[in-house]
Amino acid sequence: MSIWELILAFVVVVLMLVALLANVLVLLCFLYSADIRKQVPGLFILNLTFCNLLMTVSSMPLTLAGIIYKSQPGGDQICHVVGFLETFLTTNSMLSMAALSIDRWIAVVFPLSYHSKMRYRDAALILSYTWLHSVSFPIVAASLSWVGFHHLYASCTLYNKRPEDRTQFVIFTGVFHALSFLLSLVILCFTYLKVLKVARFHCKRIDVITMQTLVLLVDIHPSVRERCLEEQKRRRQRATKKISTFIGTFILCFAPYVITRLVELSSVVHINSHWGIISKCLAYSKAVSDPFVYSLLRHQYKKTWKDIINKILKRSSINSSALTSESHNRNISQLNE
Image (cartoon, rainbow, N blue to C red; front, side, top):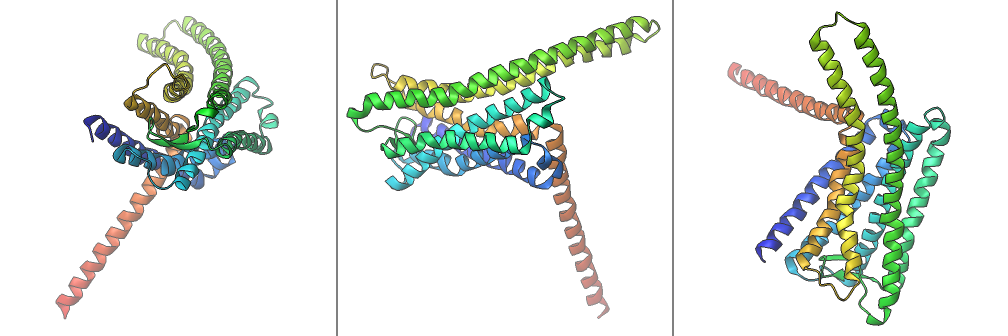
């Protein structure tokens, strides 16, 4: 193995471990907190978490084996199943992010009618569509034998081995990425930019009230005035940072891989194998960033996973103190004897 392959293998191992731990923690928060389970966005986050977990335990290990052994790991049947899952899970996770953005758009732009427009039944219908949409492409690819081990990405994924099917495969790949990556990106941009517009409008209203209050309070201390102005500035930046994170991580993680897949269809451009694996690792890194972007850094999830950790630590400390007292009592009894 070259130094590049060692580095890439190490990166995949790190991605696997962090993605597994982070997504399991999100799942534990969902099971532990009744408040999180009551919320409609929790269904979308749960679906996204399952997609990330399945991707972590199915596709990433085979990519790691492909980097190490430089050949297809396992038999053809295993590779076909993993390639089917990889296509399905990637599309499903993209559409789950789009569904989360639609939920935020309705909650912010139509707050009074949110509970009537986004109920559990509506969320279940959206998830049903995402599953049908996501499973249709791998079914077509599997039926036409367009799933296999791709050496450029060291992964079991969409791959056409027959030159006579090249035109059909090019059309299929273009339609697939247009109705998965591009569709999700358009929905994310539309919904979150609408949310940002409403957030900025509310910030302006709050700023006007704050400035009027500061003008009326003539005797206010300069430090208090300064803190008010700093909070005003942070308020304006908060929504922009969050929305930039949602859209930015989506583009940063998925765009290089999608562009590489489209450029690969041209026989003119040669793509370096290391870059192919790097773009695949970037796509895998979305399974690492999603738990933090959508869940673990939010106040409710943060409080829940801290409660879980404190409960585990408290239980372990009680057990250790019980063992200590038991051994102490045993020692005393032995001395009395």
